[in-house]
Length: 141
Image (tube, rainbow, N blue to C red; front, top):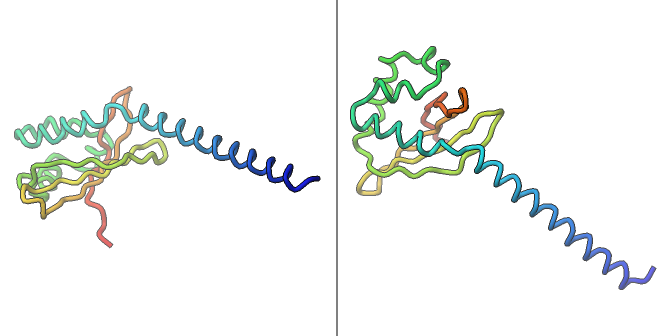
């Protein structure tokens, strides 16, 4: 076999592999975007209801599982402990799929821009609608 011919096949194989990887990445990205539609409006609705004092409405955006582990009073204490009134801007991270759930990290930023409050929201689909299944502050390492 000629060295030029082997190099030519190697280049074509490398290009085919790169093309397949790009196609896989594109399909995965499109599937992720399509599967998480509806989460951003839900997170906006959650914070809007909390900001306007409609805590019961925000609590009802959670799953039955969440409400069975966190009662209304615990939810109110959790929100009060976060001191959400100190933050004005919400920056949403990239959603991650994990075992049928979507985990979204958000950062709330204070007006001055110095203080940040990171929160991780876990969402699951309940009857074709997204619901919050967990809210937690990530562990600082």
